Length: 429
Image 1 (spheres, rainbow, N blue to C red):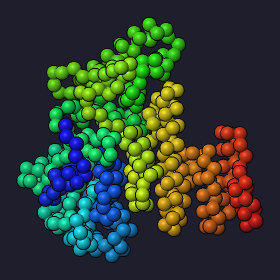
Image 2: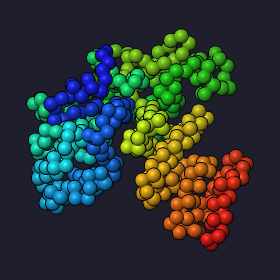
Image 3: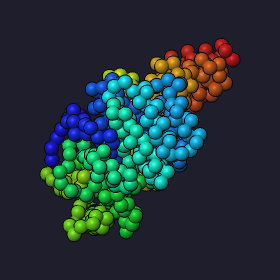
């Protein structure tokens, strides 16, 4: 393996019209965070939302989002082309509109592009867009289906490069895998999915092997006693050991079955008294990505970087952690991540407060108060916004929700600052 910095990453991709980042989400945050550390401008980021179904809709959504940055007049040619619904014309028009506003070297980062269909319509658009890209604009894409047309032709022609990397927590550096180890993807928000080289593990021979697999991925450094306490607290050490080894064997069999070679693979390896991630697999975990995004946002040096990182975290939190698993360890972890999600929502809301975008601030802060009803400070932010909008009834309702949440969760009464808001509500009722 070789480690290289962002400058080396940019050097490797220099002269390429398209950079295809393999979909390991750790890289996405590291790339964006590192890039924003070194470039105050020079990146346009758009995440394709999950509900997008066609080319016209997602291009139109991207135009609307970019207008908040590039001005209301941006995208006139593209809007006209969208009305015609001819994919190649849309691609050419978008390249022209971007070229008119981009004054220096700029990256257009399209995230989660596999939310849309890579059909003939998309292929015609992509070929036309890339062909018409101005020299100062580079397209960076993160999506799962990177080997398909039109990307394969672009890579073959030299217009595109594929970056397949694994990230490490080391000063925003990238680690490039020079071997061909299998890739394990774990998505634990929602019901949970585990993929090996893009192939989902659909059968686990029971609930226990599946749950143990998620536990081991979520606990990258764990002792045998901790595993036994989480799964078999009432069994003797001997019995727990037997059940554990049988279950772990089933997990490893399922992992091996999804990899197309003759080798045997294990999810973990045992080192110095701990079960740790196996060195035979490259592991990518959405929960880790989520946590790192929030942590980096909390220490971000400017609102632009902070907002991008919080938005990335919010996008990753698609649903509560392993929402169908009802075990103490999973329930505790679910609560922990829910509170961290509330931190991201609160951070976004307060960014929009600073910007004076009160409606957007209210949306994020209201969601944060629902996710973390024990956060009195967030309730106060929501109440103040309701008062600013003249929504006195809603302000009183929010106060009552806060009062009930504090009483039921911590047996506390609202603080002096909160009671002062109640007096303001009463005075305006």
